[in-house]
Image (tube, rainbow, N blue to C red):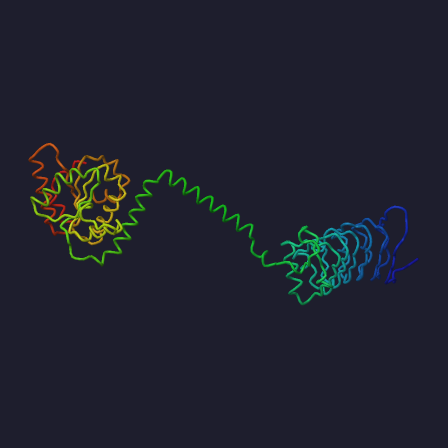
Length: 404
């Protein structure tokens, strides 16, 4: 029998023992066939070449079978397919559409299947689609479907039949909720990725800070005090009043006996200078840093009595920094260094600012043995206190050889 002019073929609800298989030559000779309905035949699969003999096919209904999956190659011989019904075939995915080349497909009915996600690539693979029916599928209500939800709401080409009735099946906490209620805004920003980046950066920062503090904590502490000194220097630079004292004495409490036994009597009683001392002249109740700043900027000079204890003192370090900032920023002769003991250069390594001062200025060392050298020491100190030259010129005045 020749059926080359047959246009519609209905093959539905054929009862047979076991599961059905579709012969690859079943449609051979039906070259004009445009509508084929193969409904409810318990079919398990279609061979890829099932429709090679029906190039004019435009309507295909393979609903109510047990196909589970179909190959994209099955649709390659049907370039003119416009209507496709495949509901209730236990279909687990529509990914086959991506490679099926169904560019003319206008109507797709895939109700009552087992897929849960529709990707952007699936929708874009059927550019002519005008009606889409996906009712009674168990959709995944998470960010995997965020694009699909946004597309349903915004697209004006395709009618998604009863989209408002689509419900969620996964995850369990969203079961029976409406798919269109999915908050797609939370999916645009990948919170998990941001948390990962933030946590990673925080951990790296903690590790770097830990190693830095472990190996360079002394340098960091010293840099901190340098910063404080710089801030206070900038704050008080333009507020300096007339000098109330000839010199502010910066010293450590462990060196106080020498200061009060030797330095103060010679400078105040013998030479007649007016000195500013911590315990005697600082205002009670006033913040100690403000007292230090007022003392340094209220005195013509600052005499730093340097010893190992001095270098270990936080407050002495601040005093030294403020005085040295005043020296370098104002370019005035305001700083006099007096060493009570020999301090090896290696012990000065953390004190970068002081080493910078020592490279540019000659300093005084207290001679313990010779009376003649002590007299020379007091004379040089008197000259330094009288000096009003610039810092560069003052180098020539302090000619006592360094002992450290």
